[in-house]
Length: 398
Image (cartoon, rainbow, N blue to C red; front, side, top):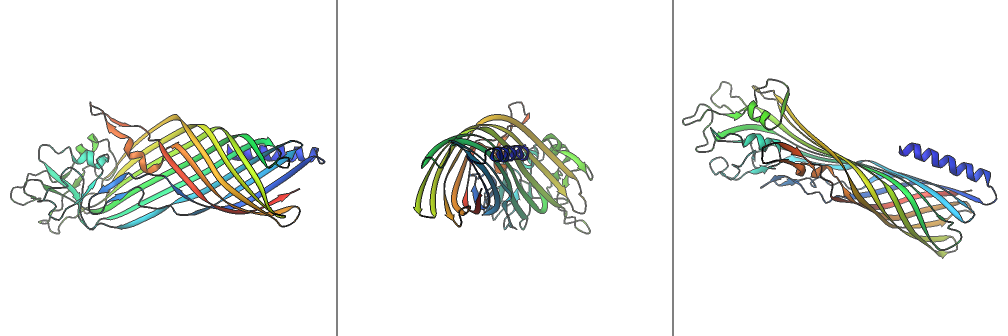
């Protein structure tokens, strides 16, 4: 949609400039941008000695590009912009010094004498592990588990604005249409040795007093909303130290939140320009708009076994969509250094505030169960994303 709109605008501007050579001025500005972003997302993946959250993987500055094309016709001008940043995110990896408890037994001193981490109670793993009511056990990953957090975002921003010709006054108002798409993905992964011990005496398979449950069952996983898609549909078993050789199962726990925001609406801009020197101009601007945000979100969780006795793969996916109001504000300044009568070097700083959007890291917050036990998910779309940074480019006029 954005690419088609951009082609149409470019064609209109070129046609009008060609048919009005006396009064029309056309400009084209390719720019490289370098922006950072913050989302305010701080959803806990783990709490405890090795606490981890969705903001543990910083995005940092990411390069992108912007194309600007415009034309002035007598008293008015029209200008279009297209901005894009891809693969905007970061990754954090490491190992955990404490075990990861899947259920409510994270403070049990028999199971975890040195303490443990607790997985989020909105996780499907927590849901499955807390269903062991007959033979109570604590399911967990042993200390030394590896983790990986990855955040990734893509921004596409198209806008077209119409207002008074910038050559007639030092300040001007414009009105315009804007379409902004923000796509978000946030993933969390744990990989470690799975174990399950009785809560009353920490007994495992073959030991005195063992209650005989010894694992995370297929039935409990299905009851939590998981579907077996590969391997044996038999859940995951405790470590059996009495077996020859001892059985140790590696289980990967994955959680991914995704969101796509498509904002469409109208904006107003206030722009002012000041000449600092004969060939140097400073321009300040502010843009404010109200938009309809078409939001789509999903939460995908998976368990992957790769041990001796358990190779089961389970997956649970929830999705939702809705429309809501969103607000976008731009504030910034540009510097124009005239190199010739027709070419200027441009640079500047800009901040973008997008309020009322969904980010990947917050989507697990939308998972719940109603009083009847039905699993529900409602896309979380009340976040504020702030992007800011610098730019450099060349403006060519004819």
